[in-house]
Length: 451
Ligand code: TRP
Image (cartoon, rainbow, N blue to C red; front, top):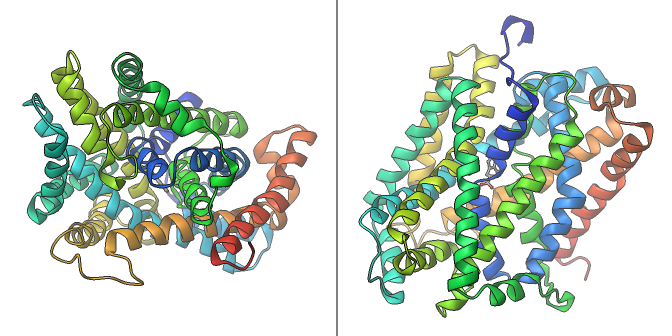
């Protein structure tokens, strides 16, 4: 497990790191999950709490997790082992690494199934959605969920795509794909916003998302928003730590974290606006749940000029966004298997991919054949989502904040971060008091201990 035994690849530049980390952060979470969660959680109340969580919990933790990876120079478990030893701390802290790689595997399993939905729609979009009605759009999504073979087929395709990239190594493939696809994704979302302004109801979308009404902030909304802040920034699940371990010394972790959070939040807000403009213009239901973008966007593509081109382009770009994220979900566990057990990269990816694929089959079946099967009242898809997003990520985040804030030696942290004394002090105090307090209060709030 000595890192000197394995030459570690490093990103080609700091911009490459910003790009791949933004590639990890920007994914289905922004384009699929954020809009539908905003819809089911009442709009602006959710957006407000989400923005606060990104700024006050997300960014400081993004910095902390990147720092742990770069300090550790290994997979999440190996990195934690090293920083824990360096701090002379209790080995129990290494659990942060294990929660991460396990959580990433769990997320990958349902992420791949949802990415499969997008693949299905991408294929369909080539023949255009012309003449599609509201009722048909809803029925088409229901029919997809009811068809286990189609779900499993596309899930399999997506898992293979992910495995191929991770198997071929860290740097050039991922970097190049990101460099082309991320700007293109941005352009398409801008196009959708323009469509929303001129052909749909952008004013209603703005009202729905930004008319802040504190009274509407309910218990569930708060935990959902915090969980989503973790999810969208890829926090707590080893992905950022793994990517940080490929980062060169001398890059400002604070600056890169800002850029990544800014890009991620910007894309989510834009996607939300574009989608709700269509939802309101079409008289659709904002709270319709995980099928939201698949029931709304095809309607827009059916009507907008050039929709037959923009439609396929959009779905393909969503696939790329999902792909650059799923890569980051596979890398942490794969790197662990490579560095801990000396597996070849191919074998590690194959093993990890196989387990996630099998779990994904259970997810796919939970929409149809196994829809009656519930644990704690949740189907397999909801269970994995809830367990990871609302429990494991905040827990890992809490532990990371406590570890960096209280346990690591201050001069090690300072050496890694390269911040001014004042900046370092503020950030460390956020990690020591702010983040644990916020995460703790939110947990208690939801459990119902405090009002
Ligand atoms: N952030 C990605 C999204 O919004 C999903 C993701 C990628 C992720 N890697 C992660 C989530 C690691 C949690 C942990 O789509």
